[in-house]
Structures are given as structure tokens and as C-alpha cells.
Length: 167
Image 1 (cartoon, rainbow, N blue to C red):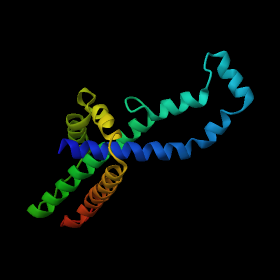
Image 2 (tube, rainbow, N blue to C red; image 1 turned 120 degrees about the horizontal axis):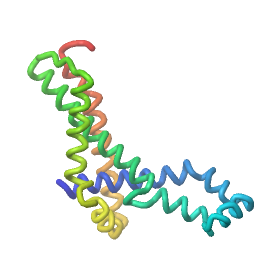
Image 3 (tube, rainbow, N blue to C red; image 1 turned 45 degrees about the horizontal axis):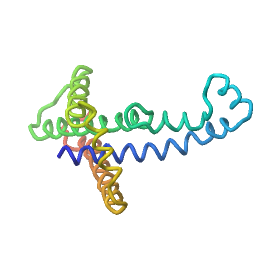
Image 4 (cartoon, helix red, strand yellow; image 1 turned 180 degrees about the horizontal axis):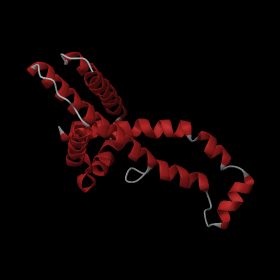
């Protein structure tokens, strides 16, 4: 189970890394400007494009890692929220969810994400393992991640159907 959750996190990281390349393309073009490169050279940075890409793609503290970690925690939150809605509908009780309940679900979600991936940088070790997978296994895991993410989002949003009262 830990392996599966970390492969989901890894594929979210891969997706985020690719989308960041798309969205930061204008910035990378800006960094090719001669005046900008001279400005960075004065600060001791020889290749600013390389530094920006390194800041984006670093699996430990990069922007892509932070954003994919956020999506990973949102998946846990949606799963928790869907279960709460499902139980509420099954028991036919009306839960008056307050901000404290949402905060508790968020803390619970962060706890699961921390337990399975973030503790002792476990995800970085898995990332190194997953980078060495053959291409066909990477593609298979990417499709598996796509369907897991789609299923969790569908369950989280579709769980409102189980409620027996209107918001």
C-alpha cells in the first residue's frame, strides 16, 4: 500500500514537473536575454536557466514537489470527506460540518500523507527507485495513477449523492 501511494505521489510529481516546464517557458525565454544574464552573472550565477530548472525539479524542496505534495494531500482530504459523506448518508443522520470538522479532516489527511510518504523523506527514496523503472512500467503506473486520481475526485465530489439532506 505504501508503494502504491508513493507511486501515485511520484506520478503527480512527474505531471507537475511537465506542466511547470510549460508554464515557465516564458520565464526561461526571459532568462536568455543578454541583460538578464549579465545581471545574474554579477550575482555569481553563471547559468540562470539551469538554476530555475533545478529549483523547479528538485524532488526534495522544488516547486513541483511542493505542488504535487499539495495535490497528494487534497486526494487524502477528498477521500476522507467522501467517507464522512457516505457514512452520513448510510446512517441517515445530518452532520452539521463546521470549520473545525474540515480542519480535523485536513489534519487527518496531512497525517496520512506524512505517515506514508513525507516521514523521513521516504518519498525521495521511492522517487530514486521509480526513476529507474523501465518505460513501460512508468507508463503503466502513470495510467494507474490517472485512474486512482480520477476515482478519488469522483468519489469525493460524488459523495454528496449519499447525503439525505440538502445543503
